[in-house]
Image 1 (tube, rainbow, N blue to C red):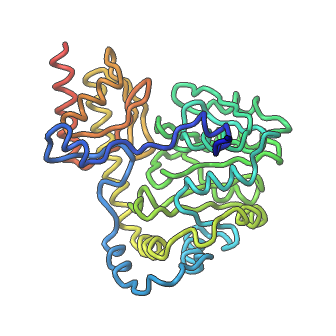
Image 2 (spheres, rainbow, N blue to C red; image 1 turned 30 degrees about the vertical axis):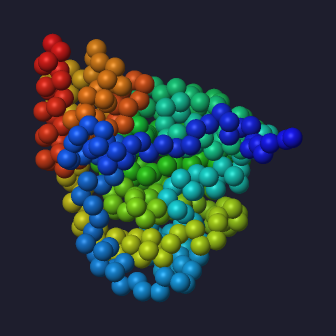
Length: 361
């Protein structure tokens, strides 16, 4: 008797794992407090205007606005783009899925960095596309090597800027030179999930590039600096013709009324975002200072996180040590990624790292 089987591509993948919940960690290690610094969430929460706005919603029996009309108007005005250039999705994960579903197949290939956001590769595998991964160079996208991988079968090129997990970035000059090398049939997706946090003077202003490059799509989100990760809402900006085609692959009513309302309210409080970004810059400098003091290897970051390697320590061991002390970070084979927390959270974390180093010296 035949059994129900999924496509064989899924057998090579694992479902995304958010890791143990705070309650699980508390019970396992007998802790009373957990500090989660693993998912690059905003440690300062969200604007007070958000809670006020969602509390006014009453009729939950009605479907949300599938076109996100009001939110669309607000974002278009903020970015100074046409409303038809926008697509709203349930976080950027859904937008990655939509792009992959709409453009990738077994007859195509996709180009990306070898150490970047995992969902680009994940959905390419599901779509049976050939994956061409290019190793990072000093933690950064090697754009020349990526350009060399593009051919007539390349459908999508992914650039995470700033890059997750390293926090490094592609500057204005590098990006413009790269876009000139990409043929018009290949879509370049700029994942700017951490756009608001990028403080470098030469971080590219990408919206104006849309007029020149019809094969460019920019992804941004409300999950990070706006502090709305729980609502799952992000958006893409591109040529109106491309957006119209991608919209066919979007699920109906994919963004909830709560998410749209929260995003509209969050947009109204740019002062809150600016304060969060300023605090992040200050706290990142403290991370740099402790790294230099103890000879930790790190990448200067344009996000709200930092990637660190502690010489002589396996990342899994560092992760476990911090976990048992109540701090949850994200381990990678060659280091750990730590979300930049509040001043108090960071100070406690620094003490733990220093204690670990001193005990083993």
